[in-house]
Image (cartoon, rainbow, N blue to C red):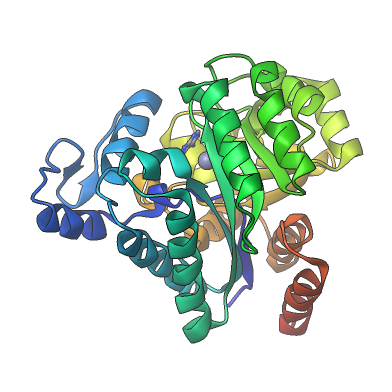
Length: 324
Ligand code: ADE
Ligand code: ZN
């Protein structure tokens, strides 16, 4: 099986509808608004974020998050992944009364559970939610840096890219950077190329979540290639959310051909009827990737991973040793 690595997946967005339905039974909650016939229902980005928030609201204890993390990393390992980074959202957990350190320990324990059985490595990128605003983002950055944890190695931002301006979030990212965290932010998904330019100019990120709409600006594509900014590309998510009308019109290959470093990721797998294995299959079926191209994506993800150097070298060795 192709060795894989994923560096862009939201933990709440990875919740299988079956697990969410089980939790709803436990909490006597109604899911009919956002789960129908075993699938999440939504029709655009705003209603997707709404379904996502409703599913998240059923993770109410640290144990629920531990189960979720274990479930996600176990599945990822079964798909051939040796490494995964998940986005955690302390804002979502706090809304359900879960304390920051409890959340981190729970996700970390879930990763350890999967590591024991499958040898998969995992790290956590704590994220702020853009549409909750810069003050909330600052609080998340302060929480993360004042409660260091060996598995929390990154800081990021998700949510609605059209809210506020990027500069508003620079203070939060500056704190995270001073705290030694790896930085990434969603941009160039629902925002155009200017959103990516602003992110590079103001947030000092090493990676961009999505970034695919950079293709609309030739100079930006050149800059991404020159600065070797790694794009966390999520093709299945982009098509589901209609960022592009079809895989044929998706710019993955045009970005690759221009020398941009790209990786393959699932984003919010059950919401988009995907997983990492399916994304690798999509790359083969729709973008003509061969085995070497897939290995290059895995290698790029490991090189861009927010991990300590000895762990990175061990992971790269596992990838190299798997080559036929
Ligand atoms: N949060 C979860 N999935 C997201 C996405 N695709 N874009 C922005 N924020 C998100
Ligand atoms: Zn995302």
